[in-house]
Length: 458
Image (cartoon, rainbow, N blue to C red; front, side, top):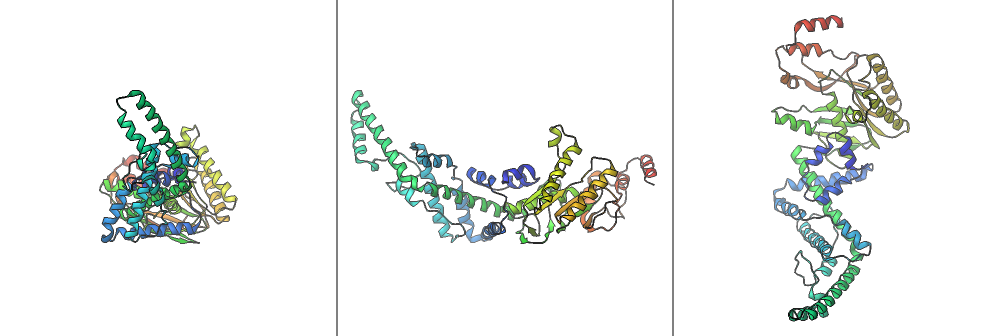
């Protein structure tokens, strides 16, 4: 899986990527191609690089140098097609040679600046030889044409060309000779450049990675993200928050309540009434795991995360409905795929929001109990949510704390989210808190309707 797929399938990833201050289209393209990492060494190395640049961004003495790097990275272009043409033994035109010269000059400028700043965390690639080939006059100007310096014969012909402007036939003859000689020089230049083509690609990747690292580090500072530690047993968060939802709430003058949660190799079930934030916790755990395995800091005060082979998610969305599937059929398809992956013995993280929510409660409870039993049997990292009562599990059971018992009536709809306590607490009972009628009463819903409702609950 590449990051571009996670953007489509895991909620909140697109928001995080869109908030990165990336300077170059090449960098963004390479970022989308980032692989889902399963090697803890690679993840650790990327996190350490982010930490390095985060530290620099906090140090005022590096401010000017970092800003210079960012300005230079604005000039980074995606010339991979041009380099591929060079590798394919094509003769490049002047625009393509200009692109290569621009990359080489930019690479050398940034290498010099990195050396001045004593930044050696990235393995830089020198393109001095390329600059020498495409800048024979040593002007260090990012423009290109076939210079007179390349050929004394060409320089002489160009002088003759100027003198022959009054004689059209002679002019055309000399012009044709100039063009032929220029094309030969281009062919010769490509022969000289070809051995450096792999270095050009590598230099492009390093510069793009620098751009990405600066953006990741800045995002970590701006959003208050943390560097997760790599664990082998427990996925645990202190102060886990959802950046997208937090931003939306802040726009309305509200705050996001962060939560603490630990997931070990047995299912964790979160119970609670609707509107109590269960799904948000699940979505945020999915987001944090994905960010971690793509080499980002995560939205929490503290985090320790286990590297897993895959993140298997079942959440309600409209995509399957658009394909003509019923909600239940779509959900069962997702859960079936999860079960099949689990039975292959893979080390995965399973996240299922309100399983069997669209079927009748009797069968729904049975399906939830069966899924929990299977996940426990295979010792899977799993987090599930439900509003069903009567669910049995040998794993951990948590519930959203919810609305304080002493809360008075007369509140408005906009008050609800502010008054709910979203923290997770241990729950040993089988009954989900019945808060729907209570919330409705607080909102001032018709008392006759609520009284009739309570009659059916007895």
